[in-house]
Image 1 (tube, rainbow, N blue to C red):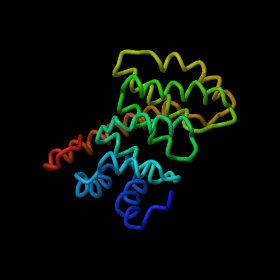
Image 2: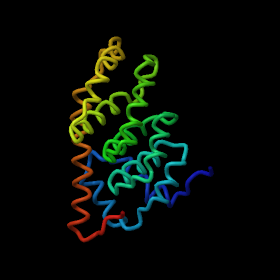
Image 3: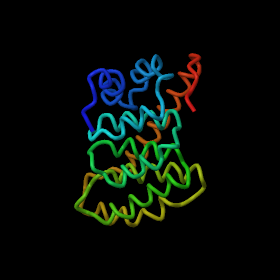
Image 4: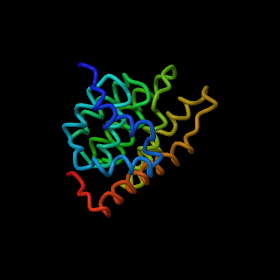
Length: 191
């Protein structure tokens, strides 16, 4: 794929990866004026870029707008883990989608990457997403993976799963706030 043009980068990528979902006020300031232009097709365009910045912006957009038709694409990118930093966005989108398919992608990710002690990627984010979906669904996937998690981090003293759980809940709260702010301002959500 050809590199994205500067107009696409400045409108759809830079304001969102720079501030991230953890700065909802800044995100809302940039998101509200263009929300009606955010489509599944735009997200697909951003997801095929071989760069983490457009991919994480697309994952945020998909989570906010609940573009579940991107679940397969996001899930496959998550499993490949071929671009750094974007996995947090993929795990967030999959957790927010909370479908059997998205939960399956999270579990498949952990089935592979918790066995690879040499690859410390987005296992923490996947665990946090499972914890979140368990709370919604009354399931125990997180508990099932916890022993594998403990083995995975046995030689990683700086792992912080409790912090990841808190961050994930905060990210979901940011998504809800962004959705609600845009709805309150009369910006119709995309569906």
